[in-house]
Length: 230
Image 1 (cartoon, rainbow, N blue to C red):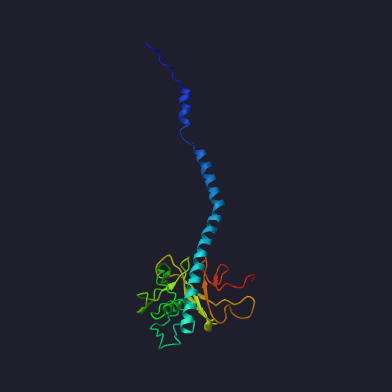
Image 2: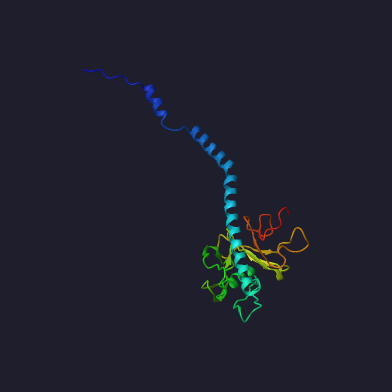
């Protein structure tokens, strides 16, 4: 009869204990992962901000192209108060309700069926209706009656000012995670930091509330941008 080798119990216990992590080792690994997450979070946040900022600026540039195209055709910039100065040529069957009026007015004029310039109907993902209002009459090209806004990459409607109303405040309803819209905010046209007047004094302004979704703070984005070095 062949002799079987003796089993080393100490070796078995050592092998068994090496199969998994101890509680202390798990805590060390979790601690290292937490430290890495804290260290990398600013970079991740900055990358997200840069992407959203780039997207928002692209939307502003597209709006600006449409506005300039509109002005070349009709000889005026789209009003920010629904008041057409060419009622026979550009009748508007809508009225402002005091919320998001500037950008809603801009969308309606840029969606006029006889415009034929740079249009927005291909950018469905840019539209929202944060204040939940309705025009009760279909808006040309968009085939909808709700008074929609164009929003930035963070979901807040742009503020749009025509130069004749730079001195007037606008009330905006911003992004909301729940139903019924977000909080209302008062918005002012941006002053030129190098003069006593407004930025882009004879044309228009488009303003994004930025990452914090609050107008009038340092992260606001403005079209056209303020002079460099200001």
